[in-house]
Amino acid sequence: MLKRLVTIAVLILLAGYAASFLASQDGKTVIQWLGYRVEVQTSLLVTVMAAIIFLVVMMDRLLSFLAGLPGRLSGRIRNRRQEEGQQALALGLVAAAVGDQHEAAKNARRARRLTGGNTLTGLLDAQVATLKGDTEAASRFFGQLTDNRATAWLGHAGTMRLRAEAGDDEAALEAGRAAFATRRNEPGLARALFALEARHGNWREAITALEEAKRHRQSGANSKEAMRETDIALAVLHYQLARSLMERGETTGKDEGIILSSLENALKHHPGLTPAALEAADIHMQRGKKRKAVSLLEKAFLDTPHPDLAARLMDCWGGEDAASLARLMRLSDRGGNRLEAISACATIALKLMLWGEARRLAELVSTAERDAVLWSVLAEVGRNAPEDAAADDWPDPRYCLEEAARAPRSAAWTCRQCGATTAEWGPHCPSCEAFAALDWRMAKNTLPVAPADDTATPLPNQPD
Image 1 (cartoon, rainbow, N blue to C red):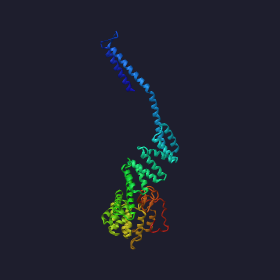
Image 2 (tube, one colour):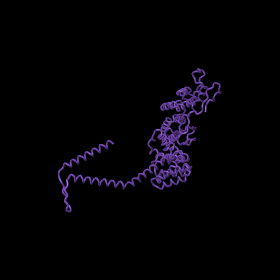
Image 3 (spheres, helix red, strand yellow):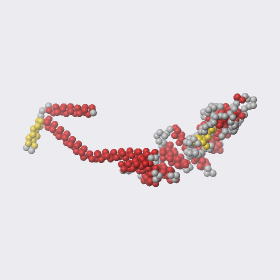
Image 4 (cartoon, helix red, strand yellow):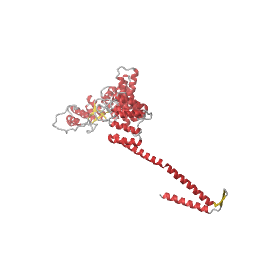
């Protein structure tokens, strides 16, 4: 407001100055035309001409405003309808996302009436049809999208999702591959296709899709945890590719090279993938490359201290003896003496009847963190105490077995998604079917444990 007042005041001053200047000027203008002679002061003539020009400009502005008024009014109405249509479309998409069929259908009708229909309103109609169970209507819409080159990948991707939800994996795969061929740089699409390919054992195709998803990952999705999940999945895919070749029976020299290359790729993405490390170590040992086999087994044990890796390392180092155990303990120390590694070393020491070493290893872990295996090791050590040893100097077998019953179960293949455990590794969780979700780690007790009772029946030597 103040700015406007200042502007008006400046204009008035300028106009006054111009009028004063013109009035102070001497001179007359004489016009002779058609027998008439007009004599007027020059300053007055200039003022009149300026006034006429100003009036003409203002009249032109007024006429232009009146001529364009209907268009502006209709445009404003049209823009308002578009805004209301976009709002209805947004509300409908949100309602469809949360599964509110009635609200989604109401906003879909309103959006179509206000906007006249477009790709987004068609998408909302397809989602409403899906909520109603009318997959054919949704399929028709996605089929229409495939006719347009710009939206073809959306049509194929939508068809893939519909067919996958209907259980028609063959049609879902066909649509997914068509969408992937059209738009490879969509990480969400690539991951969905990877899941379908992996479910059907198409390992090469799954590797291609997941590598594209990793290459074109979305912003914010590049955290360390997300990248590790992707690398583990790629490792499992490469291992499964090698397994599919090994399960053929007879393999050619070319196949053996592909198998070893696939295993090495698996270990490159996840050095602790136990089955891949064991298979690759066997191949290297058969080729006389003992040092190579030991190197990858050591890397695998440092990442995932599995008992099978410990046993294979002992074999490579010369068998089950004190010297090989000492090397394994040094390797465990390099890895930070993880609980699973100490448990594996203590079990081997117990098998070698190195009672003192087994006890020392078990007691490296605090009482609160020992698992059932370590408590069982201490119980066995206590049962084999020297006859002349003082009872207080050796673990009490009964007490150790009672603690073993209360302690967390020994390490097992545990699903990161659902927490289920299994004794054997597999590409899919046997409980929730999650792919590449099994880790070798401690499993926590989920059932309450009764307090110790001194009158209870003695527990068996080895807890489950």
